Amino acid sequence: MMTISPLARESLARPCRNRLHRTLLLGTAAVLWTVLTGPLARADETCLSPYMAKITGEEEFVYVWTLGVEGVGDGMDKLVTVDVRKNSPTFGRVIDTESVGGRGEAHHGGFTDDRRSFWAASLSDSKLHIFDVASNPANPKLVKTINDFVERSGGVAGPHGAYALPGRMLIPGLSNTHRDGRTGLVEYTNDGQYITTHWMPTTESPQGAAVETIADGYGYDARVLPRKNVLLTSSFTGLDNYMRPLGEVAKDPEALKRTGQTMVLWDFHARMPKKVFHVPGAPLEIRWASGPYNNYAFTSTALTSKLWLVYESADGEWKAETVADIGDPSKLPLPVDISLSADDRTLFVDSFMDGMTRVFDVSDPHKPQQIYEQKIGSQVNMVSQSWDGKRLYYTSSLLANWDKTGADNEQFLKAYTWDGKQLAPRFEIDFLREGLGRPHMMSFGSASLYSS
Image (cartoon, rainbow, N blue to C red; front, side, top):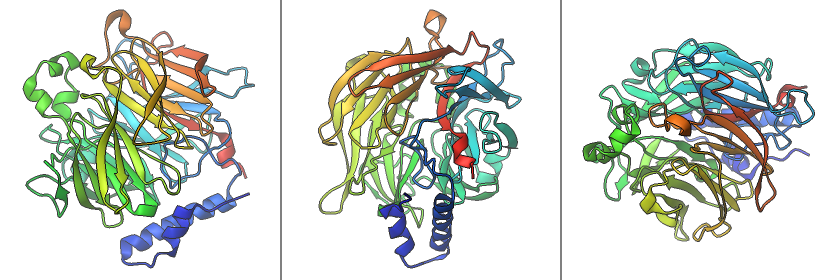
């Protein structure tokens, strides 16, 4: 049975106030049309854009955006496809690689709202690679590379990720041509045509936003809660820091001052910043809750090892508060990725330095309780979970110059099952032994998304 989410209904019922709003409504209608007329496989991952179809059944493929390593395989950045069909003779094995012909610090990416294309961003060369994943989900093909991101955006550099909006992609940057952390949000059409740039607010130019303490102008993640018409962004650091070895940055007090300490709440439709929260310690990934009345999002701060909650209070005011420690903050575990379950009750938190994943019961989002922890490897970065929360995938690489060295430089994809109490191994792939490189971001694929 098909259902239309309350969020989409609310958006459709709202009168058109301006051209942008009409465009968004048309895009939302297009998404609904796709859902209503599309395949029954409705998708999986819990942290994707609300504007795309999702797979609630089992994923068939895991796409791993992988950073090339000189002397390992072809040395190029590539999209690696892993077969996770449980009855397949190639289950748990790499079945395809698609190189991009260079090495530019592969990092994050995302699907377009129709899930037909996967956009993959590179941090050092500021390129965007677009893969066709719909024609043959087991064998994605590179169809376009955007080489002029810096020029067309007006100076934004270091595209960090790609987030689906109706008919377009939102690209949050990390840096600029001066290589510091001031940056912006850049929009493209789904076929890769530049639309516009929105610079992050600064203390000198707050753009009408209320500023709690400081507006640093930095960026990292960007996520939308459509029914509240809010966009939330986080902040990290610029090219000069993230392309230096982590050990050097950690010992440089001036470099550490150039890290993000803000999150910005935007009027999504108008693309105007409304409030700048003070969230010290580099707030990274943003995960909105899915429940129709759950008006909150989590993030973790890399340098202070805290879980933060951004929420709408009873009086309608948006606030940010720290709600839990992650490990022992004095030991700098360096929290990186987080993943919130589809029922908003369980939050997985990875920390890079100790290689741990920690699981929090966040049934009360103001009082998270850690219920489980397990060491995944000598280092761990990204975590992705299936829609039913029963399968978890982990990768190891953070940044080329921040990954550990020697025997601790493990580069893997590891898959587990989760029964609500503990993780159990399914398979693992050694990305160095396979001649692939450093695995970073994961996304799921399924041929059933494109069947008639």
